[in-house]
Length: 525
Image (cartoon, rainbow, N blue to C red; front, side):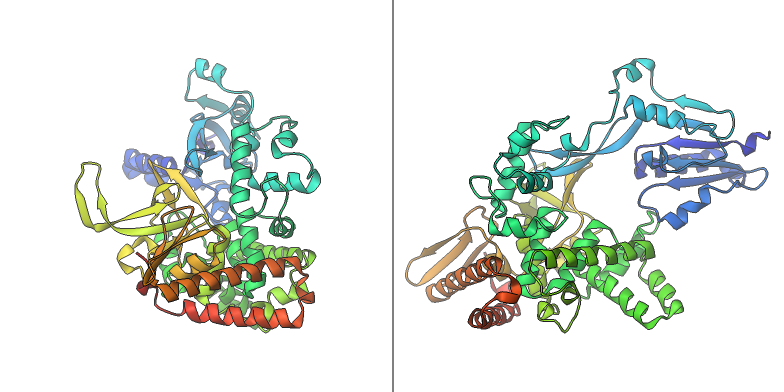
């Protein structure tokens, strides 16, 4: 057998390592590059682009596959003879202190080592090279740490309340084969109480009972439930689905094209999430026209991935059924019909972003101009991004990374990830300060001297609005009216809301939409 027909599979922890090894190989091979076919395998590379790892290369060319643990069990490459195992992989961990997830490079388990070794010589004799000493192998755990011990538990806690509401979350989960840390369970309960899903006795609230029917993260489920009340369901379903599966063809080599596409699709909205909505809506419009050439051009122009778009469409249907089963919409089809009352305000961008923010709160960022470096130097043209949990950074993939172009100093986001020494936010939307004040369900504090007044959130200092006493009191009272509207709607089946309440509901939403059309720069301190 020719040596060049023997493929090499190298296991690396992440994309940065894959890119680094690929670059180093190209430098070492120099003029002999044409004799080697170097192929990356990563979950963010579209499946279509990864098909090239399976065919045998031309005669005289050796295949080198650089892969993450995605290649451990899910794929078999018949001509791989040599496996090189770095012994590490990326693993999601949840930091209880900062309340953010982080992808850490950690040693694999013994079972991972066995799986990787088994990739060598699937169809012929093979060799495995493990780049760590036996002493390290002996210290490796037998199996990977279960997800229940290293990921957020909010969704699991909600499910426990459905099946055994009389038990506390700690009591229920302590019986698991791998029971999570009590502190992690307590933190999940506290967050669910903070967002209004559980009451002080750990019982599901009216909101909690509704969103328990929706099979996704509780904060995203809350946003969907609120969208049914604020009559903008379709865009929220698309946003939540896209936060579950990225619609863009995130080939790690074409991130610049993806960023440009998102910037075009956002259309000055200051929202990654609305870029998602427009990307999927445009795709669905082309599908209705049955124009295959336009479909292919659209995918290429906006760096979109068709299988992900189809998956997102399936999620929207699933969430629509969930809303119907929770008695929040008359029929599942009402969720996606533009003419339905369920989507009366779906074109009101500030309202849509406000509903998303209300669901994701306390995931709120306040942007402040001016930054003090670690050396104590003040930089007036830099920006600081503050959250309730601490300072974060905006990832280069969000369209709001250029802070000088922000029209609002408040951003909402779904997830922050700890990486490379910082906590990064990848998806964000600018939100109107009045949306933050009026649509969050946290308490507010009013300070009034009879002439001037301020109103602020009780649980953080991220928002303080100032104005004359009369205006501030009106805002406070309108906030109370909106809160009562939400609670009333949650207590009724949507189709059974009495006519007078339905009319009052419509009036409140009309006022809110008009308020959010005002310039956000006029508010906030």
